[in-house]
Length: 498
Ligand code: SF4
Image (cartoon, rainbow, N blue to C red; front, top):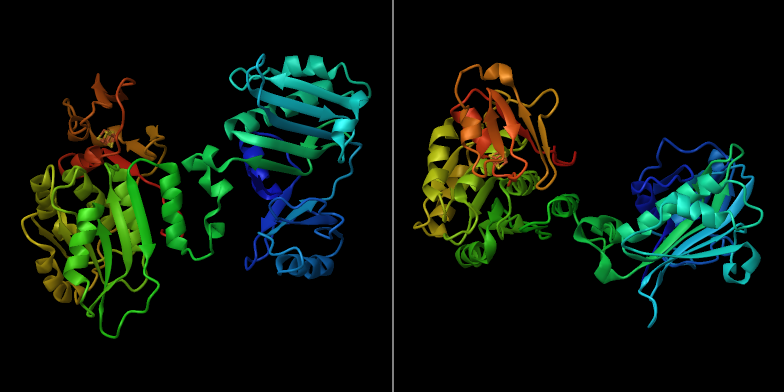
């Protein structure tokens, strides 16, 4: 079982709308945030699994900026406690009462199915099990958790508790968090009562099984910077976030830590699948005049939305001179969709690169045709290759392409206003502008949708709830090429790439 420190447990509780004491987290090396809670504040070193933090000096009350700076610097430095992940700066509150609340896994028995156990006590602090007079123990089903009313009626059995409804609402949020993240233990201690009777979590912690963590929650349970070592670049972190939000298919990216030899061409690569990687290695493995900026693998049927996002990261590498994209020549991913993603990335990236693109697989001809139509509109030169051309020929062209300059062209069309459709997986926002399509016929963008997700009904755009958006970019591509930009797609990127 692994432990989740307070600041990361707070993120889970916050996502389930459980009220928390106001606080900000500062990690080592990070600038101190400007939005600090009012003094006095509590500094709490964040160390997974650390107990009795107060008596070990890992929780400190400070009342002035000088005290804050001094103690923050001590707690953020390695000490007898090891190295803290950071420090949580929490507001000091005037509480009228402190309670204890916990949820834990109840493994069940011969007579009883496994479920959860809710513990609540009107006394905060440790040793909660020994307080039978003030302790509520309530088993709950993980599939059908109890409504607040049921929790409230159990709470009414306790002496010395007045805020039944508020506490029941809070405990309901805790149970939701416990179930949603498949935790083994979730504790709030103390749970504070303010003068106005409202309730909030003052301190909290959780325990979990690694195998129960979903991919999309990895950033909380295993923050990128803390995984095995801190050897991860900002751009690699971005790719982890992309994979979290859109887990389908492979989106692998790792930057080369070595220094390029003098005069070597710096090539950013988008290699598709093991075949693409193998061809690239075979072609350049022994060459010192080619420096591969990054390893990459986009394959396994990922969406064009995701291809676009990974490409934006690849293009954002500082000092890269050209982009080279190749697969094995027999890709599973539709190459027309991939080409749409490359086109979008090259026109929307603030750092586009001269590109060598080898398409091979389904619709590879359409992919090349697309670039025949749009190459002249891009700020960088693009050369495409059919699958029958071995990557050697591409490498021979790197010298010429690397010498090309980026033209500052017209700004690409950006979506404005409110999106007509928000797609959650793969994540994207679809904008529709009816004033740009006044013809009495179905616009090319809707005709191009391969799944039938986009529909045209009485001269208006609708969607088919039975169909799915697969994030192929065909609607936007058709709108820009054959329509009147009536549909545009926004694929948000973290600031570090934008
Ligand atoms: S709406 Fe249709 S065409 Fe547009 S991205 Fe989604 S599936 Fe592709």
